[in-house]
Amino acid sequence: MKVIFNEPKEFIEELRKEKDRVHRRIVRVTIRLKKAETALGAAAFQIAVVATCRAGDELIVLEKPCGSCFILNDEVRKRANEVIEQLKKEIEEVGLEVRGGMYEP
Image (cartoon, rainbow, N blue to C red; front, side, top):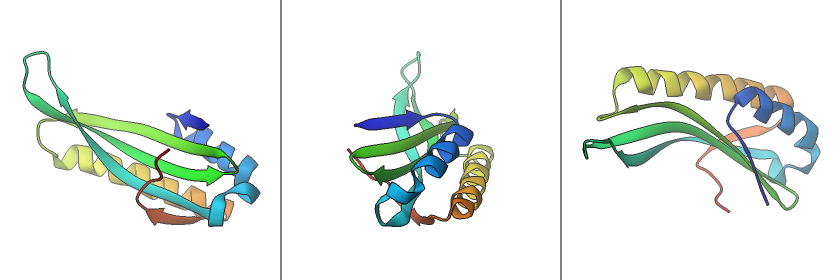
């Protein structure tokens, strides 16, 4: 089963509740670039910060959108990095380890 959050605050609250069940006490955090097409048919990228962990038989997922762009610009990259840094801080405060990448179902 997959549990999906879009807001970091809700994701962190779930980690607090499930921290003793988080597999190997690892939460994986990364930036995901997803190719999309605009209404005019031009290629664009949707950028999101994705955080995942396994807790029992559940995959707990945060998908925080950070913006869309035709090329990965500094503004979107900065926004994504700010989300990642805040997540890292809060995940470590919960007592879990942050690593790169993401778990897939």
